[in-house]
Image (spheres, rainbow, N blue to C red):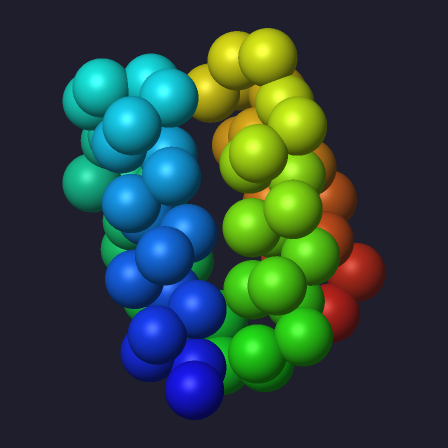
Amino acid sequence: MQQEVLRLLIQILNIKFKEISTNIIKKLENITDTYILEILHSHAVLCNSIEDFEKKMNDIVSKEN
């Protein structure tokens, strides 16, 4: 399930923002909690920029560590 959520998350980012940095993809691939990936997927759908998404991702990941 985790891999599928990750795949869908990366897919929506690519659809919305065309090019996604390898740095963002690597960070996403290091997230093992499916719930966090689902939250990020929802944010990817709603955010207006890749910078906004990356900030949210970094905020969530830093809270988990």
